[in-house]
Length: 217
Length: 217
Image 1 (cartoon, rainbow over the protein chains, first blue to last red):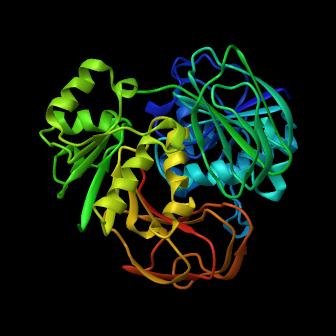
Image 2 (image 1 turned 180 degrees about the vertical axis):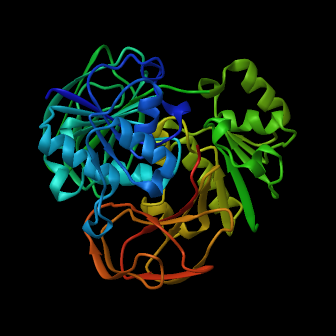
């Protein structure tokens, strides 16, 4: 499968306009309240992850009535609902890209659990397939290598955010450049910008998060 | 000075109710649009950090007219506006506690720059003085040691989020416990809970972020 979308339960106000207007293509997996919100918009997720605890029994009954494939994370397995959904997308549907919506604007422990998920051994090599998208941010992940990335037309800012120690970080042709920088702990090099439509960067070790963003008022 | 508050420019909808209703005590520093928003609410910040770029010249004129002490970060110094404000609060006003509002809900590169700020050498020992507060989250930071923390009455969830490798993490009496856990990379142990009003935890090395949170719809 090429692209799969995943909706978790964060506030609707943080959704990108395309999601608010039902303009996102491809199948969906819903997590917790995300499943319900998809159903409310006429989208039946191919898998719903969640349980009574996260939804309330009447809401959960509705999800059970509509969705064929329902999964529940087992607390003892030390896997969150979102992680189970990511596992299903990557391992069962073998997606090339997984776009996750609804992960921002609410509880920050949830957001950080999702952001740091890609650092876990079982997901790390698949990190480049995963994106988080909200109304003002697109988050993507990179393993060591040399990259050319394209500016999103509606975004202004570009940020490089090593989530681990990183060696030889070079920002070749962005507004603010770096050459063979060594990073010892997580840091957000925020408010950088593309010069033109493309940007090039490279690094030798660790995991890089890249965010394209725009201001919201 | 005991407590100083800092307002940065994130969306108002993410503010806690106490801030919306002007119920927060103590002096303020404003950063960028935060200075303007304080003035709009009848609060004159003791320091305003920002420039024309972040505000627009008419808005900046208003800030200049009202605020006696205006600072601007120097891009070459590799210090952001928020960092400059934190430096002023810690070094000049020698605060015991710095509560930062307006840091969430907008650009995630900004939020992560703020969250990871405490990892920088020049701020790390002061990390326990800094909190980030929004409508559903209180973020605080801990250096190695043994701690007793108190449940906030309006919050339900408790999260332990090592931002660095951490050794011997013990969660003694929370709903989900850990004993002498070694953490290799940032992770968010989300959705834990207090059992009763107090919780105890300890660790030997690294820097721990703790978030108390509640759901928002």
